[in-house]
Amino acid sequence: MHLITNKILRWYNQGHRDLPWRNTNNPYKIWVSEIILQQTRVAQGTSYYERFINEFPDIFSLAQSSEEKVLKSWEGLGYYSRARNMIFTSKEIVTKFNGIFPNKYKELIKLKGIGSYTAAAIASFAFKECVPAIDGNVKRVLSRLEEVNIDIKSAQSQKYFQNLSYKFISNQSPDLYNQAMMELGALICIPKRPKCETCPLNEECLANLNQTTNQFPNKSLKIEVKERIINYISFRIDDEWLLKKRELKDIWNGLYDFYELKENDIELNLILANYIKKNELKITELEHILTHRRLKVKIFEIALNKDTYEKLFFAGKENLKFYSGDLLAKIPKPILIAKYIQTNTNCYGRSK
Image (cartoon, rainbow, N blue to C red; front, side):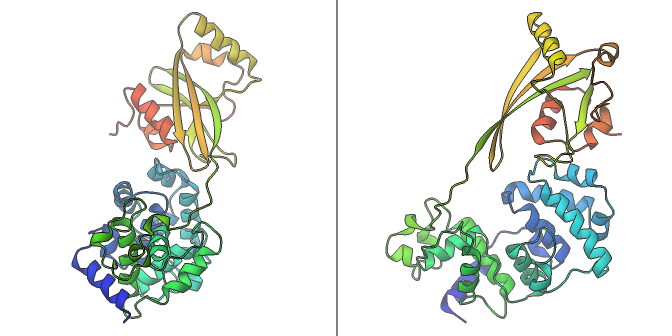
């Protein structure tokens, strides 16, 4: 066994975090945890994982569930395409493989929503296949360990670091090796001010020995964040809220939000102007950050009665419906909409 491999395994076995998905070799549960943790911190992801497994305990229950129910369980995690891909893949595994996960990396990576990292994680954790799982943490550790100057955001970096990892991965315990490398990157070899003095690999790490830690990893590609403005009108009658399901290929596809005000909505703009003139309009301004978007959201809230609503030109159109109580709580919503409603209604979230 390589010296580095031996050191990192010993460090991991001496005291790693006790996380629920580490106490199983069930490929379904490992898959769920890895998809959740793709864009989510462990602290937040743990509670989502436990709720998701409680709601959908196996591949069959997930495959048989409606998209709305799954998206509701996902509410607040963002990147909802992950949840939709899970639904698709669960159905494929049930129909094509009788509910049994493929046990090889080369088969797992063919499934929708499962990339090279997730396929390697499932293959090694559940089936002990000797294949490196390369995520951002592992890239950072390896970049510093061997002073690798390749851009970790570049297309070729995944394959490069995967090949490099075969130099160290344990044939006997590939699952523990992969866990150990990710744990090292998450707890010790962190992006800023890494804890080199307590790192089990500080005597072998070239960046530590050459005092170049802050130069690695190379991450030259930056995400361009564009601003997007969304103006909503939230109509409500007591604790009933007017919502619609988003069905376009856009952010929050499949989730429910308010009526989105458009420039050519002349009638609505006149209504808004009238409410503003009478100081009878509540306006809330919010900001929400997505990976590639900074959303600036303005919500114009109007309290009205049904007679007034039925006179509006869009009444009964665009899938707009009034929701309240249990049904309001059950439909999936963007987190900023969910929080807004929760703050401004008395019955949200009640269950019998």
